[in-house]
Image 1: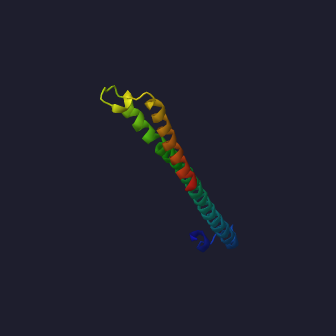
Image 2: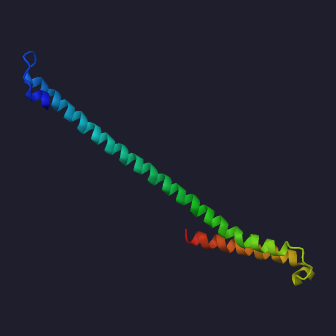
Image 3: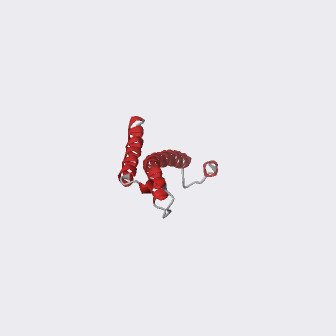
Length: 114
C-alpha cells in the first residue's frame, strides 16, 4: 500500500495495484485453506472420539459380564474349610451353572439395550 503512493518513473502505479490485489487474493485463499484444514482436523478428532466411545462400550460390556464371574471364582477359589457348599458332591457343577446363567443374563441384557 505504501508502494502505491510512491511515484517511480520506471514503474506504473497500476502494477502495484495489481500486485496488491493478487496478494489480497492469496491471503484470502490461505485463510480459506486454513479454515478447511481446521474443519478436517475437528472431523478427525470427532471420529477418533467416536471410536474411543465404541471401545469403551465394548470394554464396559465385557467387564459387566466377567466381574461377577471373577468375584464368584475368587470366593470359591479360597482355601477355606468352612465354605458349606464344598461339602456337596455336585456343587462344582452347580456353581458353573450359576456362573453361566449370570453371563447369559448380562449378555441378554446388553443385547436388549443395544
